[in-house]
Length: 183
Length: 183
Image 1: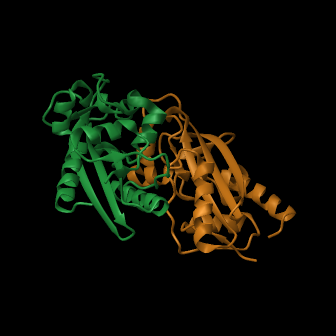
Image 2: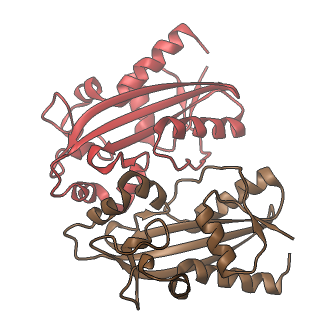
Image 3: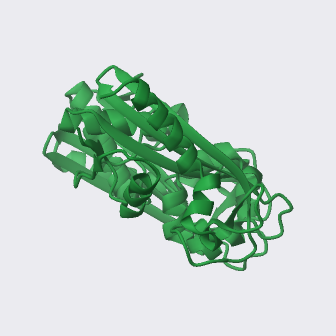
């Protein structure tokens, strides 16, 4: 059974296909996310909203990037921050701040029916660089160095990124669940 | 006829009552706002969502505060920015930046039936101060000086604030509309 992965971001679809053996397909339906600094709440509400339209089991994802020095911002608003500021603008937000720590989180919400939603969270701590580094990956990969490495995600090959990445961690939990509870 | 003003912010209800002769009442129903940097879109979607539940003509409001130097952020996310950072944190976002200009916008959306939504926008330009000033008002009133004044909103008496305020401008448009098109 192909699972619908409700995202318009082809990069995310590609990563899920690379990391898992899940059979997924995208959807052209676009539903707005809610305003909240809680990634799980954003993902759960998104899953409900898509299910309400599509009436089939489906998967949604929220990626958030929280700066410790900014009270958790951008958090789930990272997409709009990135659009408004670009990676260099994100770096400037932390200009002259000692605390460059950040937490990247990917939350998958799998909705099976109206009342059954499972969430899978992957988190990775790291720091925001002073300048963009590397050409791989997408989004803010060039400015995030995960703890334990000295490279940004954009300086890593896929296999190395997947060892650190919050998306891979969340997907591991999702896969484990689906193995025990096939659709 | 009393109009439902769908907000949980008593300060906003008080301002509408002070500025207009509209008969309004609040609602305990809380619906999440959508993620968007477009205040009109946020207001329109909120109006639709409330109407979908309450099935009666109603009014919603979105307040946004956009920093010119931050690509329009915080915009409609000003509430979450304020919660995460406080007024001093908002000031710090502009630390060492020459461009302290900002636009405050209030958008009312009046929904009469599923297909009839009217929006009323009030904007005021100004600057963000280097420190909090004044004790009146609410929210970010202590850090916003509207163009044409040398005081923050929080240093003004109500009557003076209402001469500048984006909420008063939007309400004037709403009142004009309701005078020509009684409910």
